[in-house]
Image 1 (cartoon, helix red, strand yellow):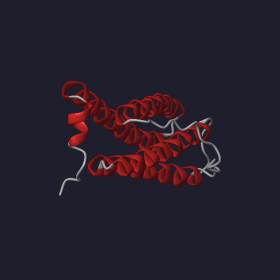
Image 2 (cartoon, one colour; image 1 turned 30 degrees about the vertical axis):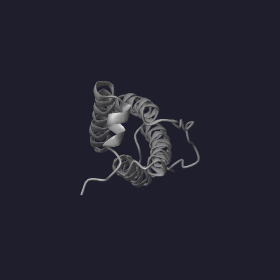
Image 3 (cartoon, helix red, strand yellow; image 1 turned 135 degrees about the vertical axis):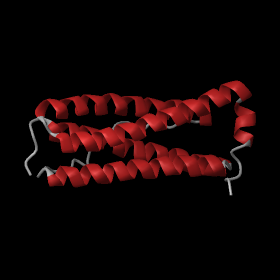
Image 4 (cartoon, one colour; image 1 turned 90 degrees about the vertical axis):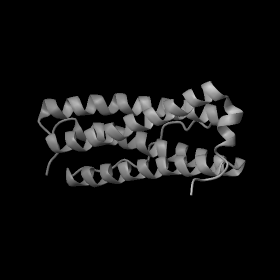
Length: 158
């Protein structure tokens, strides 16, 4: 099936965002593990895997639309030196992703590509949930302090 005008450009831009997020989350998870925050490492690694699933869906959809997935581009990866800094940097990635997804959803509606629109709306829902989770972590840190928050992140939940 041939893609409608502009859809492949949006899909490849979103793929770039997803690939960037995978790398950033993966490194943040590794840092959390290195620091001994097993519970947090598990949560952040799960986010990385979720972004991998998004990237996989995008690649399959780009191929379905007879396009070529651009796997060569990455945005700069921003690495937090502390857990709160990681959350702030991850939040920025998600906010950028949501803005692009919203633009792409609107474009797909305009050109009548409802299959792509549906895929992107699902990704948008996931990204909004990611933002909610990150904002909750930042608010918890603000309320109880970083030390108390991090002491709860040492052991993974059973």
